[in-house]
Length: 160
Ligand SMILES: [Zn+2]
Image (tube, rainbow, N blue to C red):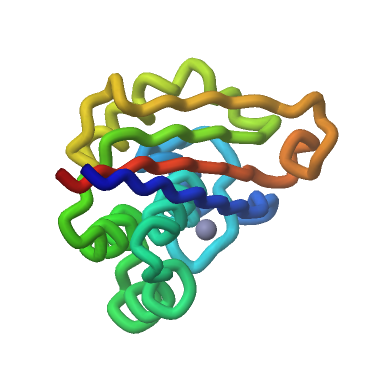
């Protein structure tokens, strides 16, 4: 059995002046919160997981490939960037995802079960194999001060 792990990071700034875009985190829509800047839906959690999968496959999706999907084909749902990354796993199966979110707003804790369920559906991964923690980091960084959201992810994949 072969085991690989990948680390991924992403961060986005809030849209302080736009009301027409919705905040989407891990595929879950937060209707009453400020959205994040970005050409896509700016789902910082899914982008972070996508980067972690790229850490395993060695094929980077965010950047050229996702830009082409977004601007070229009009695909703004970040789920499809993650699924694109998964397509390069070459026999490896994701067995665990650990996600660490840093932000002041929104308060993530109460939404963790919903976000886990959404990610579980996208990855076809049992909820018990998804861990999510959230912190404001005592307001020491731009994220903790409420300027945006940062997410770190570690993905584990196994090939039998
Ligand atoms: Zn991003």
